[in-house]
Image 1: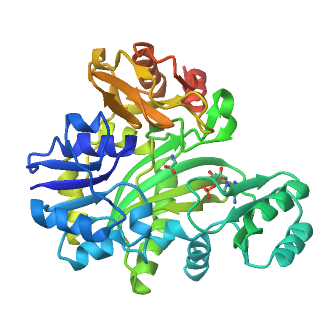
Image 2: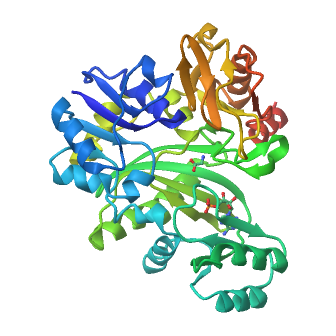
Amino acid sequence: MDVLLIGGGGREHALAWAIAKSPMLGKLFCAPGNAGIAAVAECVTVDVSDHASVENFCKMMSIGLVVVGPEAPLVAGLADDLRAAGIPVFGPSREAAQLEGSKAFTKSLCDRHNIPTARYRHFNDISDARAWVEQEGAPIVIKADGLAAGKGVTVATTVGEALTALDDCMAGGGEVVIEECLVGEEASFFVLSDGTSILPLATAQDHKRAFDGDEGPNTGGMGAYSPAPVMTPDLVNKAIQRIVEPTVKGMAAEGMPFAGVLYAGLILSDEGPKLIEYNIRFGDPECQVLMARLDSDLLEILLAVAKGELDGVTANWRDDTALTVVMAANGYPGSYEKGSKIEGVEAIDEDEAIVFHAGTARNGEDLVATGGRVLCVTGLGKDVTEAAAKAYAGVGKIHWPGGFNRTDIGWREIEREKSKR
Ligand code: AMP
Ligand code: GLY
């Protein structure tokens, strides 16, 4: 079977790398892809925002499955249009994609189905919102409604900070969700659903801040590891029973079944896991660590989701922990230069570390940086400490003066592992 993968980041390189191992695969295409993906797929130029041209490409190439990596095309209804044309797609409908696209949608779904989450109010009037913040006090969380690419959330420690955030979000007439501030460690949990059946995948934790010690601005993620030992089997069961199952059942009952990957961002509070947010795609860089550990045929699993045949499908995982370190361009997540040369990647053997490319391209023979997050160097080991050592040994072989990386990915878990020894 020939497959079209949509996207060009580290997440998509990990997906392409796993799909390429499938005995079911004929040819893999990726739009737009990157220099790493080009090793396992044919990178093609298809305008993903033009659904008719994606459909034409699929028909011309007899594509048997389209796998959509990022959220934006899903929120724009790409999966609906391709399915309407008879093309199997891994990725939810536009309606189901509201789980990520609209915070207000998800909060009200949680209300209707008793899903544990932070108490909240939704406002479209700035003076009502200000009055609520002044009444509730700080800490308090302000979230712009709509897709904000990981930005748009302010955890305000003072009322003043909260009011400034409201001005930023609502100045142009925007809407906000204001939430109670939850306390606890964060973890991510990934499940697949075909609309009715659920296949739990794995847990992960990422590091959102740019610099060591979880300091600096928020980013898309500077590193991640899986599994996240803090998500004990008991917490996983609670997350499935209290959060994921009611969501999947609720969406189906309300006529908008969710088919795709559901990424639950959780806070592990004293009362058990609470939902912070849903994403309707794999996390980036969480996908890289999930794929490094997956010991089943990814293509077969994604196809089962697309066809509504997930019941009875299982996913096997290596016992190893996987940890990935993101190498980003100097200046990220602010402005950064493009085109700087990267050396040493080819010298890393996959047994040492798997290097997933994010923002890379070829300039002649040279590998050059073209994005903010550029490489994801991934190690496998018996625990987080060992996986981190492997990943950082890989990082050490890469010569890229134009980039930087955090040196403490996995620190929380590494400290816990140290104290157990
Ligand atoms: P989100 O974009 O909704 O994932 O929010 C970004 C980050 O803000 C999360 O990863 C949390 O660290 C934090 N956050 C979001 N909502 C809350 C909340 N209700 N209480 C505490 N922290 C939160
Ligand atoms: N790493 C966080 C995300 O993909 O949203």
